[in-house]
Image 1 (cartoon, rainbow, N blue to C red):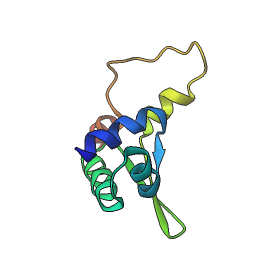
Image 2 (image 1 turned 45 degrees about the horizontal axis):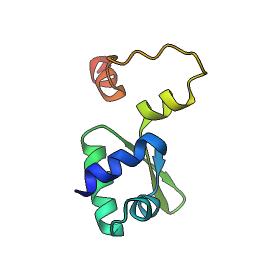
Image 3 (image 1 turned 120 degrees about the vertical axis):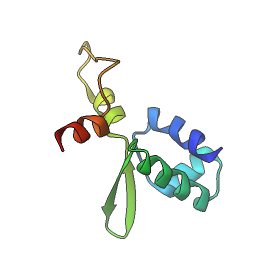
Image 4 (image 1 turned 180 degrees about the horizontal axis):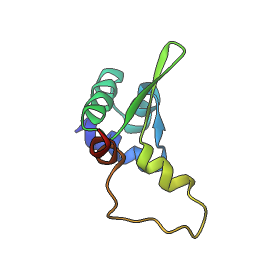
Length: 88
């Protein structure tokens, strides 16, 4: 469904707006918003308010994408949401 299609987009674009997600996934704007909110509830993305709109950021994907070439990325490391939960 829409959530899986939008989750797939996060690999190439770890920061998405609902409008961009809808266009890229070929889904309606309301489906994209719902999917991004579902991903937020799962802890996969976080929501940032930018002006009057929202951006959704997949922090774990963004960290991997911006890591310097040759960096060691621990594939089985806990996700950011799990790291935050363990600190609470």
